[in-house]
Length: 236
Image (cartoon, rainbow, N blue to C red):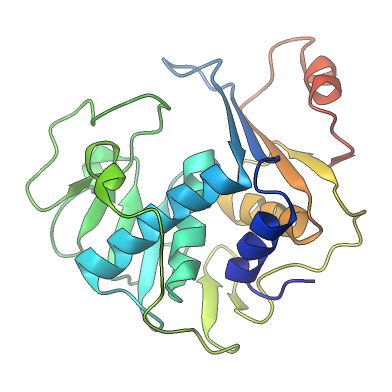
């Protein structure tokens, strides 16, 4: 079984790059309600590589660096976490010190004292809907300019922290959970905590499976139909 998040992603690409690995449903009220997004391993890796290149090239992040993710459980949160792990840095899930903040909250997107990235959650956006301060990366506008291939400057040690905060502290040698799930499991979660969703995603991917993530309460009477249509084999 793959031991690190980077190895998990690489194993999915070797196994079947075209198979869906993330299927996301947006059920929270707002303009993006009703969105369904599906990412294959290849498309997921493309997002991860672009974000990882941004982390290295713009902020010189590497093992020993810390990136605070202030994001909801969402498909965008998944590739940002994988990008942080690709450069060997630490995902921070609380208000601990960090070298960079990645957030969808415009009030937190400031250039100082800590640089930040403003993430727009909507799928087809080409720029933030609010004014982005100078020095803050507008992810929707700028991330696409980074390369699709990524090579890390350095590798984390097995004992380096992969994630901290929210009760989810784990080193690189233990951040991928060892689940007793069948190979190829299609796992559904509607958990509202990012720490749990990241663990569930890594657990599903580590057994060559996929994640179906619902954010918010499913439409009345639609949950069972959704799980059936997505071929979900396990719900957590």
